Amino acid sequence: MALLGKINRGLLILLVLVAFALLYNKTRLQTLPKYSVLKKDEAKMEKEMDTDIPVVICASEERIGASMATINSVYSNSRASVFFYIVTLRDAIKKIRVYIEKTKLRKIRYKILEFNPMVLKGKVNPDSSRPELLHPLNFVRFYLPLLAIENHERIVYLDDDVIVQGDIQELYDIKLKAGHAAAFASDCDLPATHEMVRSVGMQTTYMGFLDYRKEEVRELGINPSDCSFNPGVFVADVSEWKKQKITKQLEKWMAKNVRENLYSSAVAGGVATPPMLIVFHDKYTTIDPLWHIRHLGWSPDAHYPRSFLKEAHLLHWNGHFKPWDYPCVHLDLWEKWFIPDPTGTFTLVIFKKSCLT
Picture (cartoon, rainbow, N blue to C red):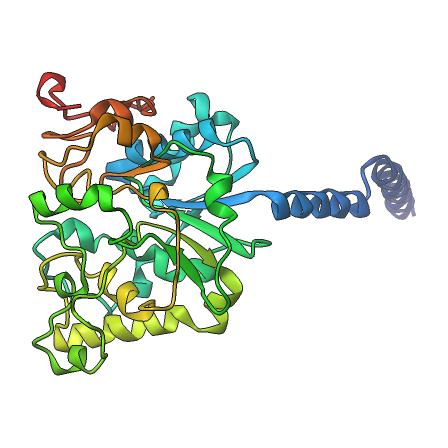
């Protein structure tokens, strides 16, 4: 009986403790913000994102400093609210976060997105005269609507070798023609660049990107002398992109190239540019040429007049010669926006006296 009494007393004490615990939890829950408040905050954030200018930029581990310079130039020259979607591979996520949080860029609004390179399996040949053009992040532009980017009907895409000198709002606000999923700058739009382009042998027509010896290329009916465009800078209409199944079209031409080598051995463009040229041929809106002054990285001799570069809204060092490397050209225009890597991983391989301005 004594043992039974002890057990009953123990059970009674346990019941009392449980009752106190339930009362405590009930009181505590009433003092916390309700779920509806959290929902309201989320709705407010979504509304704010509707008014943001979404900028997508890729940041590879080996070129992280270049991406940060691009971001800095956009952020510093834009009056509007910009939201950066930084796309990278898993190995660079932590470094990107440190680069931002430990520098002046900590004030930007951003989201880091991981790109899965397995999506490219079987779609890209391993051979290329420029292996760096086969980097998985070069193909992110094909998959914009599939990224975790929400509440945006329009997206601005920028390569990491770009410096923006104008207000990105102006580029974002371009009026796309009906039925067009994107806007690019034509390679024939700016007469002021033609002499320089010819002097360094830069390709500006479809002949420089597609292998017209192949029957399937000829059957496209694209005149080889038609002007090309550079997909390193563009504005995309997400709804039209999805409606026209642009990603599927691009993947189709990637697969065809794997089987038939339609452009991987062409003169220029690697394997990421030709699919864009094919899918968007005669189906894109042209942007103001001053919003994409390119070819600065095509040759160490690619010099523009200083007055012309000062008027440019966007500069692009497309080509092999990057401003953070050697040899380089117009270094001062890029270095103005460069932020040293707080981890010391990304460094400039530059002999400043040898880099022409």
